[in-house]
Image (cartoon, rainbow over all chains, first blue to last red; front, side):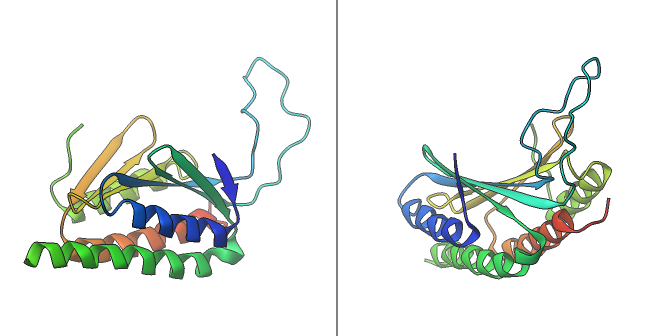
Length: 102
Length: 78
């Protein structure tokens, strides 16, 4: 799993979609992420000494074949990411229509 | 696991599931170009909701839904 910046994630994602045109599939996962990078301590163990800063972010992962990429979106970057992601997704369903009509 | 029949059904159930535990839920979409299929999944590891579509019109609705979802995920609520 490679953690990328938002921009490079989107360009890699575009490549994934292009490669998946012939065969295969692209899988994407979205999950709320609070920045924690260690497991939640068990109840019988003393709690973590350093409480993680609590900011809501979004973890986005994408997979094509064996390639996996991921990115973390902060609140300030959400608009930019959404615009780019929407246009990418909308380009794909266009193909769905084209194929169905022929 | 069965697929829900309509997008409306999925959207309603997914929204409810997400609001129950926003930090537990993950949303997955799989795009299969060769079959022109989009498969969606929303789960909190207890309940699993799935939906698949081949219709471009649904994709527009899905896009709107993802936008809302993303926006909520990064917002300070909860």
